[in-house]
Structure formats: C-alpha cells, structure tokens
Image 1: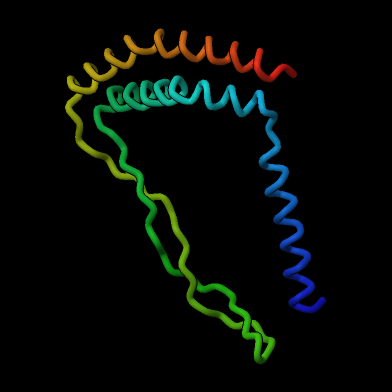
Image 2: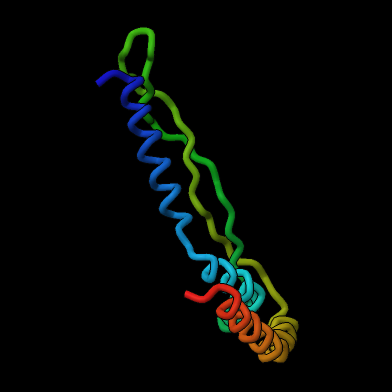
Length: 132
C-alpha cells in the first residue's frame, strides 16, 4: 500500500470515528448543558472533600519527556530512529488551609440543593422541548 493510500484510508477512519463520537440526541445535548453547573459543583465538592481528608491538595501538570521514536523519510522511503516528545501527568502535593477548605465545603453544600432544583427544572424542560 502506498503512503498516500494509507493516509486516505486513515483519514476516512478518523472522520467516521469523529462523526460517531458526536452522536448525541438533541435531548441529551440539552440535558448535558442544563446539568453542567450542577455536575461542576458536585465535582468541586468531591475534590474539596478529598483535600480535607488528605490534608493537602494535589496539583496536576503535563510534563514533556523525550523518547526514541520512529520517523519516516519520504525521500529514501525508510524508517529511522528519532527523538520524539511525549507528555505525562505529574502530580505533586500542595499545602492547604484545611479550615478554609471546610468553610468552602460548607458553602458548596449549601448551594447544592439550589443547583439541583435548577438542573431538575431544566432537564424537565429539555424533555418537553426534545421528546424522545
């Protein structure tokens, strides 16, 4: 198989995968948007709970690294070893004020019922607007 045929075939496969990954119904899109703030608040509560339980927060960052990869020379039509860059997630502990985190958690928990009610009303509206 020539290189050009390979890339044409690969682009077709990638286009199919991209189309399938975006196959949500209008109702699902509406519900996802309607519950976004509620889900975000739930995630913040879970993270803050974890921080209080551990006594510290965890900072994540993407760190580059170099490894021996495989490259292709189109002139000679040969593969050769070459340096490539990959990325890994590095986590490190970060000091926190546990009392401040507890106060933040109390505020989040106080807001949760209001966000839930708002999300429930919006989901009901989505189901009316976009019946299955």
